[in-house]
Image 1 (cartoon, rainbow, N blue to C red):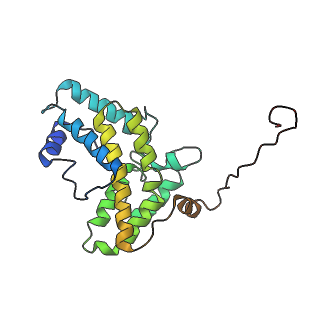
Image 2: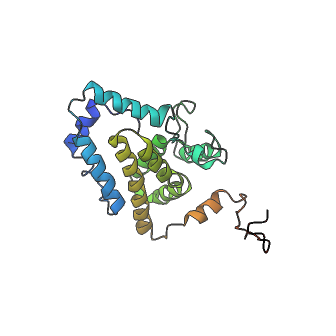
Image 3: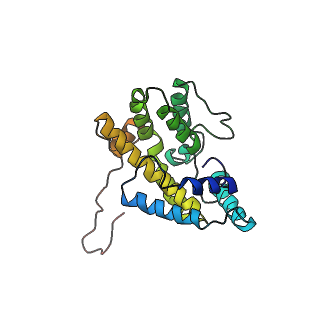
Length: 226
């Protein structure tokens, strides 16, 4: 997600046997489907990349992460904010998480704090700590309150609109990987994973709850009364 795929990256992925080389062994059907898709996509690329494939990957990367051509923003605020705007409340909430660990976005105007790459890098930082068991609760809460509220909708939209199977696969795999990782954290911590409704109520306590109102019909009118 951090930069467009080039020959060096593709070669590295092939040599490492990615995605089969992932340390977390994924178990769900969705995960295996994403892994199969990505594995075939990587295997089908020439090594080194020729100009055509390089251009296709570059254009797809730009459409997802730079120009928003696919209307699938990699920034959380766009998915959470009611008006779908960037750099909203979610960005500042994520920034607070980073600050607790002495971290911050290099340039939030270029890449906002709530960008997918920075959220994944923050989780990687937590898991790399000398005593990771002390930050697992933080990681779980961060994923609940931020990353997992929007990652799968983002991944599904990208997969449905992008032009290359590589980016379809990597986005779907990222989504299901994080979902299974969160389930694993729940097992380790011995805590039930909160429902999405519970998380939304926690994060947006003042948001009105929509209520289904039954439609009234006028006897003999043959249609709804508005």
